[in-house]
Length: 206
Ligand SMILES: O=C1O[C@H](COP(=O)(O)O)[C@@H](O)[C@H](O)[C@H]1O
Image (tube, rainbow, N blue to C red; front, side, top):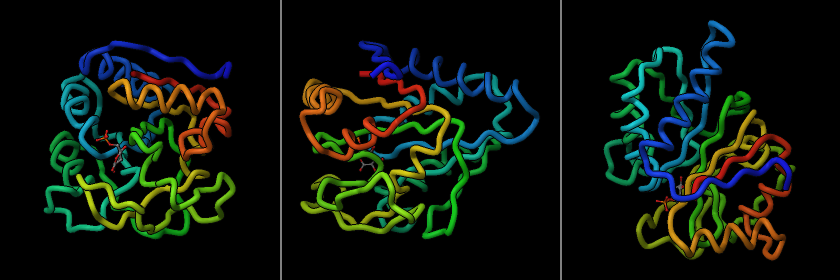
């Protein structure tokens, strides 16, 4: 994949620096808002804390959760609730994901990946398609992940692919092996489908 760069062994601060430089570049290109989508789970939040330490005009940032668990925003498992607590005090807007009819193109789609190869909440059992006509879907993972056993809402593959840049941050040898197999075309997991369809630059921090 000529559009793919893998960057290994970076700490949270270095990844946050990289993300900040991407956002700064976009903010320098126009005076308007910069709209991104970000992951949930556990990996991204310490990086977001570091990112918010950067001197950027956060009032110009619009943050879409890439997915969420169907729980109230004050539930510990709510991605949106955690994003609000982090980004809103800095002045950024955080969007509530619902079954809207359209989503904007993203300057950057930051994603995680589960060890089962799911991206956002597009789990293998949901058979996500790169030509899904829906921008957002509700779905039920099967099996339910024990750490977050909830129904989900998620951006679809076309919504994620409508971004100028894809960025993955995934930790651990198990996930790295799933990623490598996906890149090699040796599995048909959601991560493999997304990467095979991606035409924009893709950066993977592992
Ligand atoms: O459930 C989810 O899992 C994935 C991976 O999360 P991690 O904690 O293993 O990094 C995440 O990307 C997704 O947004 C989240 O809702």
